[in-house]
Image 1 (cartoon, rainbow, N blue to C red):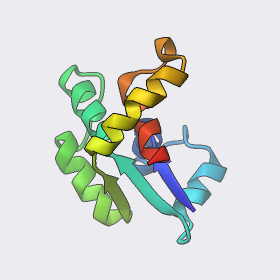
Image 2 (image 1 turned 90 degrees about the vertical axis):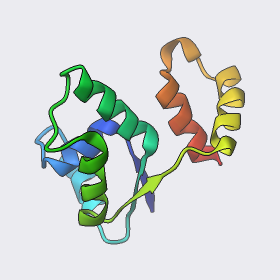
Image 3 (image 1 turned 60 degrees about the horizontal axis):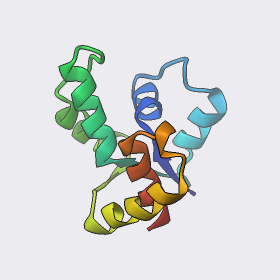
Image 4 (image 1 turned 90 degrees about the horizontal axis):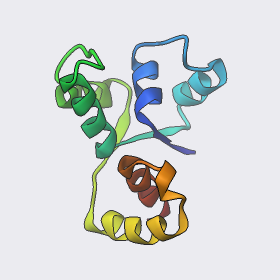
Length: 111
């Protein structure tokens, strides 16, 4: 099974936070589960850290890069195909309630 981690899930997993439900933690730790994180989530962490809304052990890019190898997580790039898919998703989603990073994450799941 492949799981695309959102920003909060990634942070909670890395910090072993009690916010992460036990069942989710078990799925993330299962060797059969392929973990993925989008560059959009790293971008979000960098923005939150720059505004003082998030404290990490290092700069967002370095922090995530360290965790990728440590927790066997694959980084998903943002490609032009993903961006093209955002256009069609934007037409079908309630975009008033979706942030651009959420639309981008959804596009990655459908490519």
